[in-house]
Length: 337
Ligand code: AMP
Ligand code: AMP
Image (cartoon, rainbow, N blue to C red; front, top):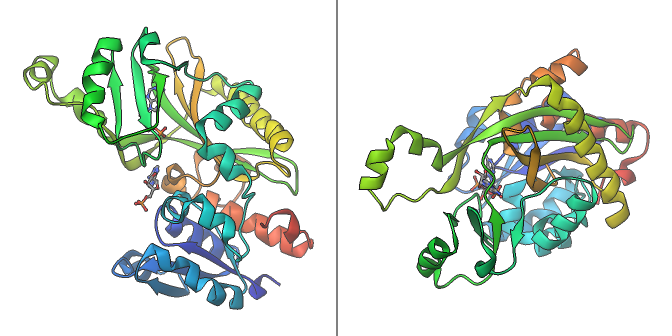
């Protein structure tokens, strides 16, 4: 039965893991790849078929081929970033996930409403620059991968720095939370109703993660160094065990609330992006309503999936397992859009 379907994804972000996981569950796999970027997908041998496109705009043109192959498309951040939510909504090829939730996560106001209702603590938002009374991080709408953020220590500093961003229109001024970053990876199965905690990671961001290598004295001597948050990789993490009950609560309430705002709610993989303060308060600054690349260190499973499964279980494989179960129990309509 599984052989009647193929698993397809855009070749970037977490595609290697998604395709490998699909293989492990018995699916044939398809990578849709930008011309010139095929090497990893060929070298690691995770794709049964590579469909090459000249530009991301051509993605819409390969849909008929995907439909003919009976492919199920697995979304990730690169697909959303390169196609945009409008195009993703127009996709005709079967899509793993709830497309309606995209609107809720891409609009910061809607996202906040959802997460606050779920009982998550979030950074304070300053509506007007004049209200800034503590360190803040300024996020421009549409900023990708942490590029184009800046931090300001007070209102005066903000006024100085915003001058460098003349062309930018919308932005949000968020309280800067001092603590350690922790990205929680979840999977909610609409078939079993269970919320699973699959792992955690922390990010490796340029240049903010290397500023500590420059002494404060030299940083002052080089005033042009401003932190930037461009993602270059992900580092595995295991959290203090006593934090786990709250992480489970947060994941479960996020799913519960999502069912009220956008039926049938959030399912499949998702991630809560948090900062944990010295008071062990967990502050959530973002949600990703799909697989995050922070799960990539766990192609062979994480310490948490090792506890639950007696076999290597990556997030990519967990997605394929859900699709396989849905095929076998004739419930595909519950997980595809
Ligand atoms: P890319 O295909 O690598 O250019 O990534 C497209 C978008 O996906 C980026 O702008 C990021 O927002 C996101 N992304 C890619 N890789 C990662 C990662 N390792 N961690 C977090 N976000 C990522
Ligand atoms: P985002 O694009 O929202 O995932 O954020 C990119 C990076 O900016 C994060 O990984 C953090 O390093 C940093 N960041 C975002 N929001 C905050 C915040 N409120 N406080 C501290 N750091 C933040």
